Length: 236
Image (cartoon, rainbow, N blue to C red; front, side, top):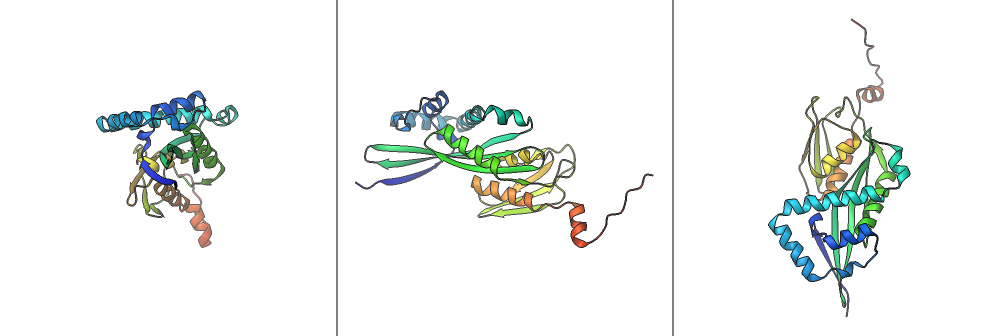
């Protein structure tokens, strides 16, 4: 009998309580232990109150991320930021039943002008989050920030994702949501206006936001490219 692969693009809320409990305890039990009856009960909970279930799963995923981080890296910087943006479950249908695997998208930064993202896949939730966290810290890009905001408006694109970022006055806060908010918060931006105008795919939105931040240039950099010198500021 040939294997059939079924990709279930389910959000974070479809992760069962049994799977997260087994990963936190480190028991290493197979995900195949999740029976169909438990999945049906979880679907009923999601239909009854989807917002609360999703928030609970994301919160518990972030707890796994913090607990899996080594002590040395946690002590390196108090301003380090990591956030689980999305967790996806994939089910492979085989002769003996269904085998589950998980993938996670994590955004990390130092809140001081550097931000990166990582993607990890594994058979357990904690392991895929750990892989994504390590990948996000390896490839960080610098971001030009001026007075806790961005120096000029910019539009970033990646695949079907399209994100527009606008500078904001002090006290505005982060007017953004989802993956965009996670990226700008990790970069250390405190005041910004953002709008996602393309795909809702979290991976494309995160990559489009980082593409927009990479395009930012300060006044000094623009003057240097044009071969001009900025006027010296004189005291009144």
